[in-house]
Amino acid sequence: MADDDQDDTELFEEALRNIDTHIEFYRATNGKELITQLSAARIPPEIIFLDINMPELDGWESLKTIKRDDRLKAIPVVMYSTSAAKIDGNKAIKAGAVCYLEKPHSFIKLQDFLEKISGSPKDKLVATLKSIEATRSHNIIVA
Amino acid sequence: MKLKSENAPDYIRLAEELRRSEERYHKMIAEVQDYAILLLNKNGDIQNWNIGAEMIKGYKASEIIGKNFRQFYTAEDVKNGLPDRLLQAASTTGRAAAEGWRVKKDKSLFWASVVITALHDESGEIIGFSKVTRDLTERKKYEDRLLSNALELEAKNQELEILNAELSSFAYIVSHDLKEPVRKIRIFADRQLEENKSPEENRKFTQKIITSAEHMQALMESVLLYSRVSIESAAPETIDLNEILQTVKNDLELTIQENNARIKAEKLPVINGIRFQLYQLFLNLLSNAIKFAKPGELPEISITSTLLTKDLLPAELPVKTRSYYQITFADKGIGFEQQHAENIFDVFKRLKKDALGTGIGLSIVKKVTLNHHGYVTATSEPDKGAAFQVYLPAT
Image (cartoon, rainbow over all chains, first blue to last red):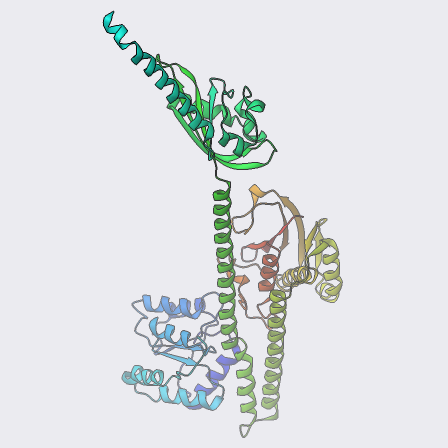
């Protein structure tokens, strides 16, 4: 996960631990750090969560870099942001993310979401994310 | 002989016809009202004058015949040798055409369209010039008005585009930056309601709620301040920037003391401006410079001022017709990468996540410079300090 907001990464990690203590979780505080970590990783991660507004390298640039890298481009990416702007959601899918997730307002919701994806078999992960993406609210007024 | 005598009346008739034709021809020229049609000798001295010339230029024939045509030109054109150049061009190429402001008898100007044609004798020697002038002042005024309307329209369009961009950036702010602390307050309040939470954990959540609420408050205050700087326009007054700096230093006294900040300033100029906006400009640049000092080092800020003439101004300045003061705020702080030098002025752009800042200070600085028909640029390198160049019009 790349996110410069410490509260969010802590909540995220705690929610993950509550579901499954065996999940390996790595965090980067910006896109640049993420790319360094990914290049150094012996085994690439199974899923990447990307915040949009980050210093150094933001979520959009990070996504571009990942999608250009042959070794990384198959990893499903979830854009994870506070922005409820529909334009961001559509932009994320266009740029190659599988799913756009607005950061939830409750810990339970976050846990529910993480349970859904961690419970999905590896070969069904992308399909699960796509079904979550399909339910993304479309009643947002901010363009 | 016989033949001749038989034809003598024909000659007389022909000569008479020629005389009449010449007279008609002279009359035609003399009475044309819309064009000044003159004959000049080789030196440009006026040989004849028609009604058109009188109507356009205001002189009577008796006042002007024999004078040089240079007197129809402005002093500047004469100094630059324009009348001589036109005669020269007509001599070499046969014809010279020009449009420009010319001077009437009453010293008022009219927009003239002029064609000067060289006249030759049988051997090809230049014997003088014909000069046809038309008064196109009305057309010129109309064209100028069209041009100024077009420019005004373009300026209005640009203004609208900027407002639109601001509006959509404001919508984005609401959809993102202002939502973030609310979301956190909700999520941590929610967590306080979870069962089996220790008092320590609940304290931690409360603290996070307070921090988020504080951040929310700071954001709202910044947005309000930004909109105040954007909308509120007081009448410009004469402002001594040394006084503004002193006020800001007084208001920042505690911060300056706590951080042991050193502020070195040259004598600053007096300009025309809006007081509370210039106060905000100095306040934001100085508090940023103090805030972004290198850890463990004392903040050192220098403020210098240079008067730039119009040929030395940066390309970004909207108006380049006057001189500007370049006021540079330089610090020795953590700096930033030059690639961010433009977007640091965007609303809510923060290069470093930092609880102290809302990311709106530099947007206010930029807005203030734009409101004053100026500009602001930044130069920096990580760990090498930053310099902000503020351009404000000299009065």
